[in-house]
Image (cartoon, helix red, strand yellow):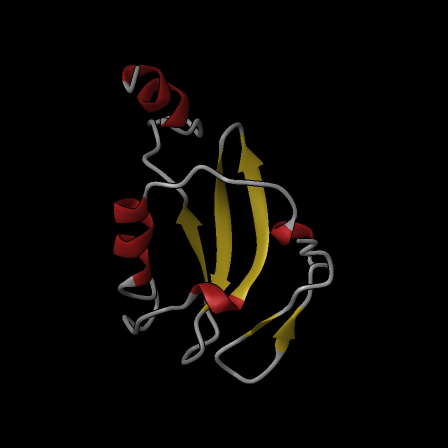
Length: 99
């Protein structure tokens, strides 16, 4: 089955196509970390949705997703996993522990 050209609907009725740069490739995420970050916008406290991703910064196996709040329009930085004090993601260490 070829998934090229597949699309997904956003919560605001728009369409995300596979042409968005942040949709390319695969990611390793820690669901608990991402879900915790989505509970509240850093500005207004309302829930935020991954349907509103605007950009991404990749950092090894992890990434920072930039998600816009639908209520106040603040862009929130959502880490895909735990982070160290420096800007490194903790994904590689966790991956090596699972063996």
